[in-house]
Length: 89
Image (tube, rainbow, N blue to C red; front, side, top):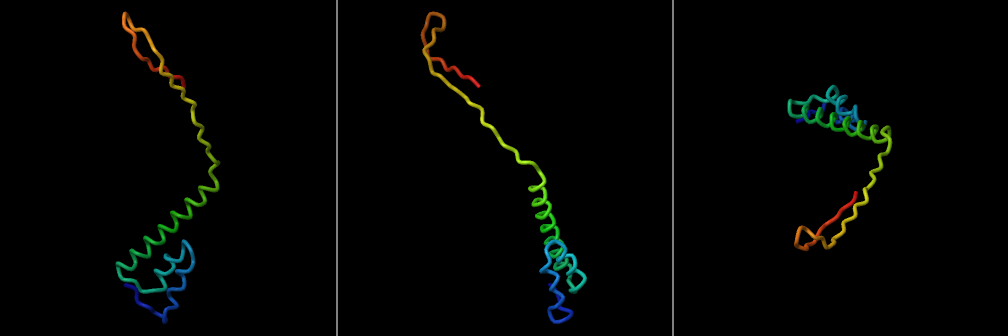
């Protein structure tokens, strides 16, 4: 998958978040599969950083619940009597 050029020191950029996988493309000699793994790793880390930054920038949203009241009550419908359900939002 990946060949070491300098006794393993080529993998040192992988310790750098976000840009490390892209830097490792130049310091190691990856085959096609290894290069695709490094690129996917770099893209995943970049997406994670973007979501972290967006979470701090975006204002907090508070969801408010509506009060719903349901009442079961006897109702007269025509000549018959039945049960009705009344609701308010």
